[in-house]
Length: 529
Image (tube, rainbow, N blue to C red; front, side):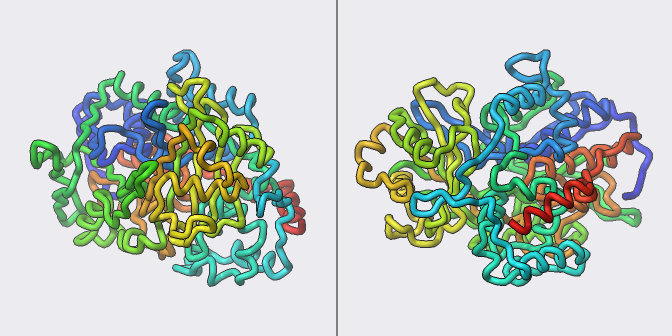
């Protein structure tokens, strides 16, 4: 990056394109660590709500919706905890968001007893089933430098039998890896979470928020920012920007926003800052209903903007690698709201898992269905007599076992019928689904960040020669950290703010638990189970 002499931070403006957690975190770091006045910060979001993938919406009458659920890990997530230790909770402003999380997880520790099921029977998921050849492939992966892996796929690195082990089913359904995804990303995950390797099947190392992440994290962060004057420009879709090259680098001079009233132009001074979330895992999402299947969209605003600005700036990455193969990047989730709690109670009894314990995957499912029954209530406005659970499937284009059509073509009702088949309660379908609502969500880019890629496909957070532009989120390159995590987005925001303001502060390093002798010993023992 070319360092220029800039006016005092109070005379500069900051523009965030996209209203996900990366932008919210970046705005918070500008205020908290950069001493920028909140009124100088503007967040442009095409929707009428911020939070991005950390969403949660609805009410007991119209039904709830969460497109996904974020999991957390206290030995890691260094930047996330740094941020949320300083954000007051909504329930008690004398306690931070992290304080509330700590208390909740102490009272509701994760311990999955039934991580995998097949035909109604619990499988001992702790028996990973790795052979000598599988272990050798893992070791070979760990010692191979990432650049040498290139765009190698998981199915090209491991043999077919590895993809049928209990270890793979546990791993794939926790992190949402597919056989055709990047093996380089698996390598990063193994290093980042090696301390969790022996207990992946119990999910003991996973921590959660008290409610869904929107209620527990996004709302208090948004309130903190609003209290400091940060402006949120809803209904503003940034479609393009003028980036002017010069001998010393590139400078953003103008943003173009589409709004209900037409195109708006936002001038950007050379000393101002622009932060762009390039690409989004929930962009293009389509929501169905109890009697309506969601549509499949194959484009999204964040991807189109990234393609536009990268066309003449190759150092801004290669968005097509991630955005142009929806067949490989999509999967579908569903949220179930129950006034009649018979199905909810049946899942708890059938799986022998109390709400809040973890994730149950049904291996007999052609769709590879999984369900998550969170501790109740899962929404701040959820009544005691209403229950909510969430589920997803990694293979939505396969025909169901019970419903003879792909999940991608199914209504919420049909998804529940398929689930009830695997829960062995399909004979009670009419009464068990009475006063129950299932909202499916098709997400065409939900695992785009796992696509096979090569160095340079993701731009640096602050590209070389950039005077006032930084990239945030899952598609900005950060060595050693792992995508599909809140931490990756927050880390990108902290990195961008500290570098752009040239702050005398260090971004917390990625922890190296893989170097601890005890972690190594426990991992080796687990690999032989």
